[in-house]
Image (cartoon, rainbow, N blue to C red):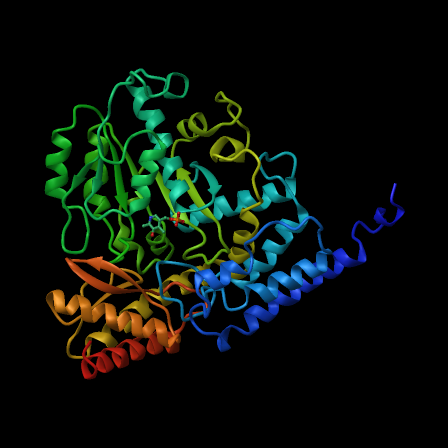
Length: 477
Ligand SMILES: *Cc1c(COP(=O)(O)O)cnc(C)c1O
């Protein structure tokens, strides 16, 4: 045996150096963010080319690997963790969550079962308890910490599938979907793409769902919904939305969910980001009735700013959740409060994904969570007010939460102008919004959600959009 490989400390000097280098590099990266451009300075080919090629026969020492990764990644990272990232709907990986995430990897826990790693179990259960409580959802619910909103939607849909088919005398977990009775699936016209993926993964098909008409803000129209429900031949699965991706709007839960239940149906809420408004007393009224649903999907890597990737599925009745997910193959009533990872998530082996969220929740406390969500909603108002004060720039949505849909000019020419303005803002590299489509228009979509985002960042975004717009008018394409 190679005696040099025997390392009494558990870590060789080179390995220890690798850990220290990584921690140092992580800190340097975050401290250096203000000086960085808002977007990568390298193209995909340039950046990816640094890593591609045949795997060399000989390896290299651990510390060198880390040094190389750090230097090769330079220019190829997006400033998503900074306060100037307004694209998509992404959290900024709160530093306390990042620090806790180091521990997750170092501890090397397989968090698939609760009894093998009791400390991790304690933290994950606290996250489930706290999030359910913050969002005013039923405390007895089952919950699973998953990779994000899409998987949380999938798990919710699979729990619904189990319950709705069981009510028709069919055990889907045993018999599968071949020959199963049918149930209708209803979803709003302006739903996110993720629930459609969830329906595909659950074998329910993305195209056979019935899309229900929505209003100008993307909210399901209760009359159209009642008409669609009346045609249902069996108790339906209904997918509602808390936070439309372009408008940030909420379906009228208080009207819709009782109708679903009257028909014996299951109401699932895709609340990836919007459900967090339920944690803010003065904003929670916008989601009245949401707590009466049967299942909810919410991201932790969006508004909670947990490092990627983290989401949560919450199911009022644990039994169908466990029946759908349990890797033990059969439903065993567990003794844990409201979850057992391998019984409520698709993974068996899994990262201790709740630990960073635990750290963030402990750091923020209830007041911090409320402040974060309320601040971003105010920033969205502020951006909408500032850009719409410029003649020729319009905001196409009411501000329901943290999303702003911005369009320049009118009609097809306006669409081209909007895209030019967006490109110019992105190329200037001081802020980074992304595009979308809303109300038949191409839009610049701004999402206020990063933990470090404050008034000056919102004002910088507005100023950049207005300056780019004026420049584009002065310099026709
Ligand atoms: C982001 C988002 C999703 C998907 O969540 P991921 O974490 O990206 O998988 C689903 N629905 C809505 C409304 C979202 O904003």
